[in-house]
Image 1 (cartoon, helix red, strand yellow):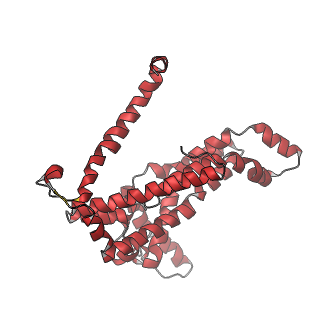
Image 2 (cartoon, helix red, strand yellow):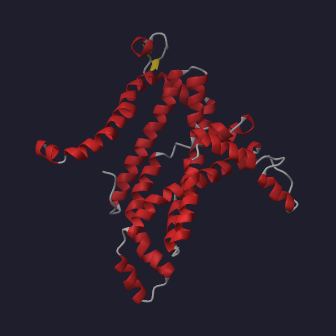
Image 3 (cartoon, helix red, strand yellow):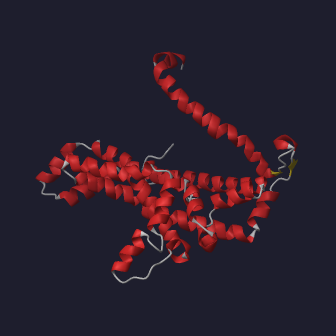
Length: 298
């Protein structure tokens, strides 16, 4: 090991900042998770607060509003996974078929840009576009005789807005990994397929998709780990009391209980619960992928 460290010292030096980031911002804060098992008092601190075991979890699971919060989180996250996960794959396949390099790069740049806009700004754009008075969406609907709709206060539309805007913002960024995987496919496979008479769709279905299948599986496993991350900042900036029944998720619930109401232990318990579920899903999906002959995360 020492010889390897000396030989690859510069590679390990490049690895050091990332390791420090993970240790400082991911592992050290885990010490604070103990407040989920305490009746935390900010004046007494972690060391002086009373230990209550699983009381906070029992309190959490018996609260009527948490059941609705968990259901909303699961529904919104599942919708984002079902519609959002295939979107960058489809976009990457379509971009790969574009032969005009200048046009391809232009489209890539355009679809990447929303990723770099913060949700604070992007949510403002969404609110302006969906404004019932002079919003672009309602103006277009008015051209065809439609009545103005205040989408952000309608429960039937709100979840769809969350899913659609999240996909629009992140779909371009998600294509990067898939395009990189596609670029590594052996061109001779396509040449052989052309000789055999395969069209573009058949090449895509029989060569491109199978060749990037391992990348799709790994990213799907990672996505399952975020199944309960329904988008804290997006939801917090867009929801309102009129749609709270269908929009309140675990992250916003933790924010209200832990920060606004100063129920730190209860908020921490909700966060721990979400993390445990994510860990179970990642481990289970990883083992399932291995059983089907795919490469897992570990």
